[in-house]
Image (cartoon, rainbow, N blue to C red):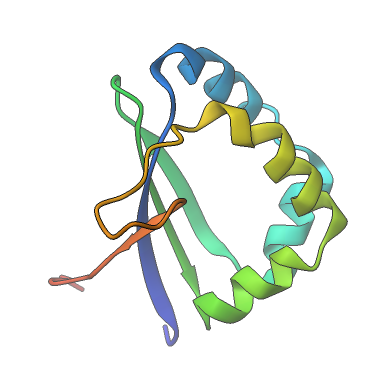
Length: 108
């Protein structure tokens, strides 16, 4: 497969973990359609008991896939509804939001 394998971290507030799980048990169909149309493939989220969230996806171009999602109304609604579930703490690099991890090994 050509393209990018992307892994990222976020942090769900501990008191919001149950709500986060519930919302992802029933992701809006239009959100799923938008992700697929934007080129997000093989997308998974993994949640640790302390709220550490690990995301993984495959896409041809991650920046383009993010931009495509940013242009959708459904993503704007989803992000507004989900924003309160995440920790507001800054990352070590001073940014907020997802922290993309560097892939250092891949066994095919």
